[in-house]
Image (cartoon, rainbow, N blue to C red; front, side, top):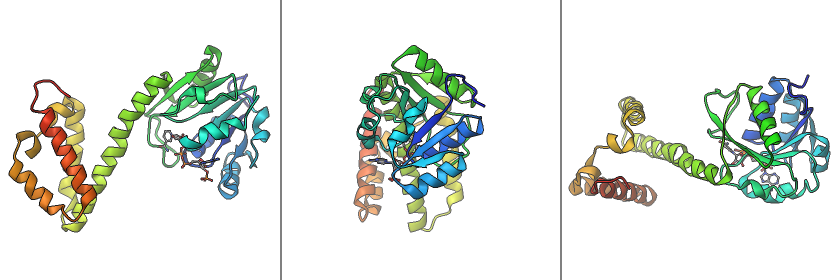
Length: 262
Ligand SMILES: NC(=O)c1ccc[n+]([C@@H]2O[C@H](COP(=O)([O-])OP(=O)(O)OC[C@H]3O[C@@H](n4cnc5c(N)ncnc54)[C@H](OP(=O)(O)O)[C@@H]3O)[C@@H](O)[C@H]2O)c1
């Protein structure tokens, strides 16, 4: 039973993480997923089975759906959308960094970008979708689709979404990269993980309260170059990690030398 009268069916292109997440979420809340269109037949069929949809390798199958969501890699969106030329329904993509106008195949276009790292389902609902649509009626449809699943959203145009995406890469991807470097050091130097995990929790908590700039301490902020050299010496066999260390230390040092934030 459709929850939004004008959306009788949704098709999803792709069989990756976001395709899984959206297909299963909408299916759970009563939407009819008509087709999973995917080039990977095994993954596409498996997802289709999970959400009561049909599998297809051909975009044409989805042309009768009210909404088509392109949940494919960012670089593939431009080419994949061309296969929907003349589509009369609402064509959406899910990328943070891709302008909505790339969806030139349909006059009714929009974006639903989950501002969260989507890895596995089910996911908690405490994150926000950034949404955009060419027409206000379609923006209302997107809102209805998300509201029906108790998902949060804010409106952001393509330029704003790109800015959010940049900040999101730093918050999520860069933090994960730094944690994985720390994991490697724990393993290489046979350290105990627990005290550093407690430090990580406290670091995030304090930064959320005071802001990252105000929370900063350490040798780079103080300008303790002897300490920095010792650390660099320990990393000399790991050029990539050494480059990260030097670059972040330089950023910390210089940004704390001036009265205003950089
Ligand atoms: N995961 C996240 O945390 C996250 C968060 C926010 C937004 N997004 C956005 O969501 C979209 C999908 O990301 P994802 O994380 O779901 O990626 P993913 O798990 O890597 O899945 C990508 C999907 O795109 C398909 N694909 C790639 N190139 C294609 C092409 N040329 N033609 C047809 N299909 C193609 C892949 O098919 P194959 O399996 O055959 O390669 C796969 O089904 C992206 O725009 C991404 O920016 C992702």
